[in-house]
Length: 330
Ligand SMILES: C=CC1=C(C)c2cc3[nH]c(cc4nc(cc5[nH]c(cc1n2)c(C)c5CCC(=O)O)C(CCC(=O)O)=C4C)c(C)c3C=C
Ligand SMILES: [Fe+2]
Ligand SMILES: [Fe+2]
Image 1 (spheres, protein in one colour):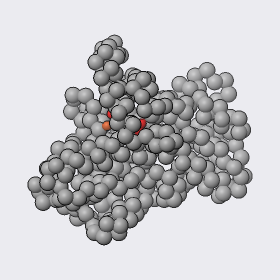
Image 2 (cartoon, helix red, strand yellow; image 1 turned 90 degrees about the horizontal axis):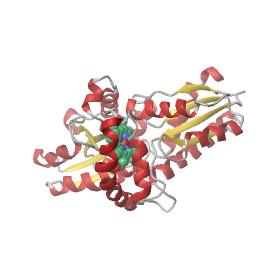
Image 3 (cartoon, rainbow, N blue to C red; image 1 turned 45 degrees about the vertical axis):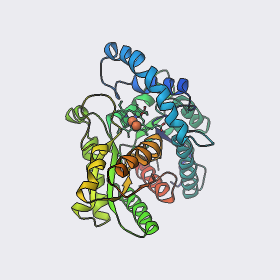
């Protein structure tokens, strides 16, 4: 990174409501669930269903869930993404010997891509590396982030050069970071436990149509298991966060966790490798909902292992990804 002064980093995460109220959640869900990358049904059919049958009921319900996990500074996804951004910027700048501009944007909602891109431009950035904060590529998330960047530039007369980070499902620093956080949890609890690796699901049809997400998740699980020297009986790979009626990727997390105690697995640790940052899906759905399902069905001990968030391991991982992908500008 020696003599480079005109490149900058745009870190991107999914998006989250501005406040934990039904009206904010409704606005956020409307934007998110109107993206055909996320729900690929024709808008002519989907829009009435979304506006009349989903948003009026889901928004107040989900707002209550956000209230349970909301932090003093805001939504966990935004607060923790911002902390990571700050730490990545400090680490990159220290290595480069000058300030490296790093901004955070969300695919849906705030901070917008337009505001982050303008902030980069104000700092003299001409080369931008887009860093979607998704370890496993999916068209529903990573490609949606790329789409958002491209649409933000539609009217832009002074295009920057762009580098798109694809994914890092099998990056050695990512696998080591996940394994380190499992080992840290085992040390804390004084015992190794069966490890459940729970990934956000997507409709099975998307994978049949070519989305590589499931394959990338399987690679992550296999490598983490190898790194931790786990036998086949010591870990389980599942998908959480189903939405709607069609079949999603299996095995389903809820059904699997209900069944584990009857198979003699009564103490578990759960890690959610698809989430670089803790959010409503990990803090509520995994920690509370799945934890309850497990315990109400004979499970004795359930501990969620936090996402990598703004830890030193995650900062080192992102610095390495950015360095590897900005070589042509060095
Ligand atoms: C409707 C289909 C959905 C697909 C496909 C999907 C894919 C997907 N999502 C993430 C990461 C996150 N999802 C989050 C929340 C969330 N996801 C969906 C639906 C789909 N996700 C909904 C409706 C919601 C909102 C909550 C709810 O109504 O249940 C979040 C958290 C946002 C937050 O504010 O905390 C993240 C992160 C991935 C990685 C993924 C596919 C790979
Ligand atoms: Fe999601
Ligand atoms: Fe959920």
